[in-house]
Image 1 (cartoon, rainbow, N blue to C red):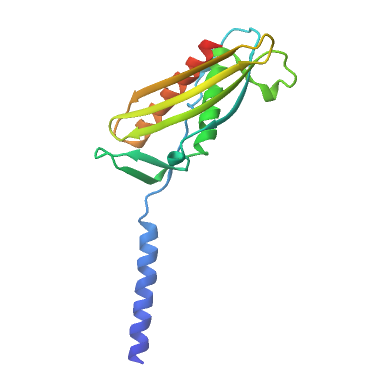
Image 2 (image 1 turned 120 degrees about the vertical axis):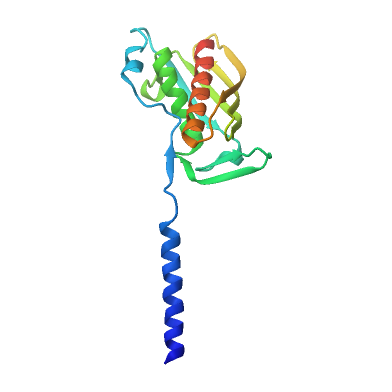
Length: 193
């Protein structure tokens, strides 16, 4: 009987430890590359001109960061996966949405999916070659992008962007630095079209 009591106590202790372990996990925080909508952004919308029609293809990202959890470079040059910090959507989708939102805000762009049969516009492709965060220092985005006009004569623009933003030592600061870098990427694309 005593052996059964000890086994029960051990089992109950294991269950309690498991429950306590789950309870001590910090909550997962989700981040977005899309900026919060503000009335100032709405007020700075471009005047009513013909919309810039853009077909923004899928954005590619390096395999190392193509996951919900954040991958950060530490000061010793090692990589750390932060389980508790995640993008709200797949990184490639976040990048696409953030670039399109900035183009709409600043350049009166519309998604070609909303303008079927548009006779003019651009097909844009973005290949992110580096999406890196260094805790307490910086956020980097290096991307090769191209834009091809839909109308004739066909015109193609191909560029690379190397974007660097300083960042603080907390996750919201790193997310903000990447948001600024993505906005600069969209600005560089919009200015060339």
